[in-house]
Image 1 (spheres, each protein chain N blue to C red):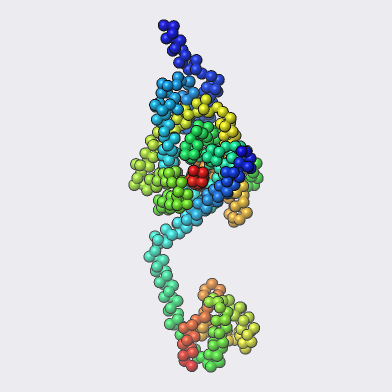
Image 2 (cartoon, one colour):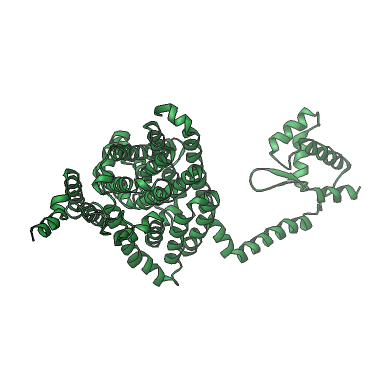
Length: 375
Length: 149
């Protein structure tokens, strides 16, 4: 009886837990708190936070419970991450939700989405300088793309052992966009610049919206074929949305499919952050590099917008450059908030969506390029 | 390996530079394509009216040629100055030219009374305005005038 009781006790989490599990459980709770109380990306942070709790309940190895054990349910669900299945499905949902009208009305704003991708490549250099291998550095660099599914997709292909820290860093910073970006935006722009009003965009026809995903897919994927899984699904989703006749599929893509995949992705990514795998020096470096990459991406977009203003007759509000960071639609919302603090009658959200969605395309191309260069 | 040594060893600079260039190329190409998309669609949707417009322009261009066959009396001196202006304009090597430039060239070539003869060329519709401030030499009228010699 005593032996049985002792065996049982030795298999409980209370006995197996160490301080690292406690740290991670607190981190998971912080994620859930930020998601629910602060409304920072709740659809992502809540499943990830709960996944962190699930991954950090200490379990007896051999029972098939841990995400890293071959016969566990979590391990099977995690295959969607490891094999790069979830990110393209999420991209299809994003495509089915996204309205590219403002980008089509003013294509020059797409350049801001390209400029913000400098964060990816500068962080890549930083990661190399800190001693990471080239495949790891590329996966870390993509955090600067501020696009969770893209970051997970590339990491799964290049450095699967870093999925946990990179995904958590990417989603944490995406959730913290309203905290990270405003100081940089204020630092790099004058009040006069922040007050610039944008021209009303022209009305975009339905035909343009239908043709766009096909042209964009062909142009981008012929240039960077490695971006095909992500961009293909993104533009398929958008075509389903714009074609009208496929409304049922578009509804499925932007509701049930993306919601299901988001839950599975968030949960398994969270569960992959087991303390013994996650809490190490590399993870700390990845978090630092992630923060730097978000800062660089924001600054690159802002500075590029100011450079563009040197040549444009109708000046653009340089705050839009910050929306090139492809955290959709958070960075566009931040632009709106910062712009309205200076002038409450200035509505920038609609204009900011153009660099924002082009940033999604840019970061997917960036991921494709890194994959093809490093692989 | 750390620092610049690690970056150099992994071709970091090259990958980063090329990466940024390719991202920019992709999005610039896309922005160029979509900036023209609505124009192409407009052209396609209104193709009938554009074709009609082109036909009208073509006909307009031809009708005056028929109508403007010079009826006024053309003297030998007018023909001679027409011949000289024809050579001048050929040497200018410009299909459409401004009148001040033509007069300047005529003066520099020693043509007598260039303003007077230029006025004649305009009257007999050998030199015709193109509607945007430039003029062109009407070869068909020139042939007709010369054939009456």
